[in-house]
Each structure stands twice: as C-alpha cells, then as structure tokens.
Amino acid sequence: MSQRKPPGVSRETWVDRQVREAVERGAFDGLEASGKPLDDAVLGQSAGEWAVEWARREGADMTAALPPALALRREREELVEAVPGKPTEESVRAAGDLFNERLDAAYRRPQEVPPVALPFVDLERQLARWREAHPLGPAEPEAPLPGRVPAASRPWWARVGPRRRRGSR
Image (tube, rainbow, N blue to C red; front, side):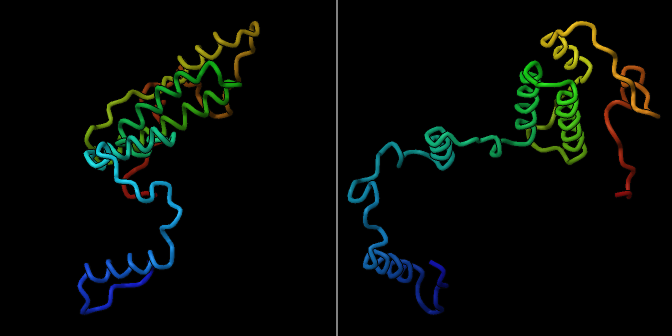
C-alpha cells in the first residue's frame, strides 16, 4: 500500500477501496486464520500485553524494550553471572570495562524514570571470582602497562573511567 490518499476522497472510502482491491487480487487468500473470528482473549488485551505475549510465543528478546536503567541492571546481572565461564582474564576485564563505560555514559545523560542507580562493576572482585573458577596454580602477576599505575593503587575516582571536559569532543 504505497499509494497516497488522493485529495478530496474521505479516508474511510479510500481504505475500504484499498481493502476491496486487495481481496480481489487474492492478497488475503491462504492466511492461517482466514474465516475464523478473532479470539476474545486477544481482543481484551492492551497493546503492551499483546506485545509481551507475542514476544513469549516467538521467543523474542525484549531487552530492547526495557527502560535504559532496567536494561543496564539486567546486563550487569548477566555479566556477573557469566564471569566464571569466561575463557580468559582479559575477556573478563574487557566485558567489565565495556559495561562500566556504558554505565558511565548513562550517568552522564539526563536521568529517566526509573533513574540509573547501579554500582560500577568491580573488576578486581570479578577477576578474583574468575581466578577461583579457573585454578591453574600460581599464576604470574600481570605486568602493568607502561606508564600506567595498577588499578588497586589508584584512587576510586581514577578507576571510574576517562572523563571528558565540557566543550571537548
């Protein structure tokens, strides 16, 4: 239905004509529920209830429909649960850093309802959990990157992540 409604024709008349022409072309032939009345349970649902029911039936991921604060909360829970199953410390660190960056960006945006009220992922605690799940004996401590102070010896505000000054991009 890519045609526009012609001027001077009532909307109802135009829509009725479009439906009648589609029926004549056979566009509705062979539909699964053809000729059957609509289910009373479906007619009584709101649009939101119908969308949730459809998502359950189709196995769709509704994370994108969540408010940002709830989506971040869910993501944080999934991240913490997945730490022992990660293959390397670097993958744990990368996932934690990525989440902390997104959480930092969420805190910088104007707050929505419900507001974001989550702690950052404590990478040292998560790495300790990962090491407990992957005991390989005494591992050599990671050498810090040149010119970088190890995270444990930095103050908490320096571990939060990079900050931008106003006006710089």
